[in-house]
Image 1: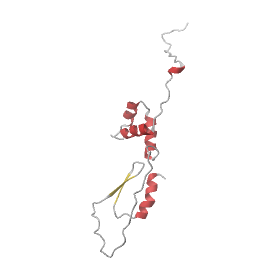
Image 2: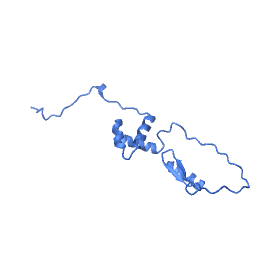
Image 3: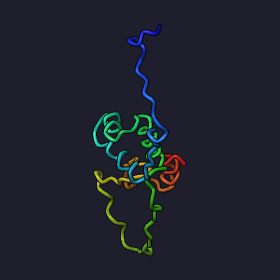
Image 4: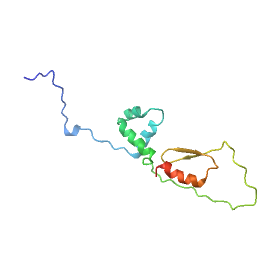
Length: 131
């Protein structure tokens, strides 16, 4: 005879009761990822709030950092026109405290001096973007 007090409870679900996988749009994923970056150590709490696993949120964060999430628009370049060289003296040197900030598609920020070598910067940017 079976002792029913020791038998674990078993719940039988009908086929229609099984939870389905949710589909997250890139916009929703991006919103959750940005929320997880708001404060230090918020991955687990953010995942719990949205009912997803920590590992799924970590995957989305990795996709975001690699530039594979949230790129609905194609990066654009601003047209540049150079003025012809003149015989006037060159403009004053930039102040030492001036810096340029470059925000990459993967969310990384690069802060450089205005005197940075453009060729070196052109070689560095693809490496930092992970291409």
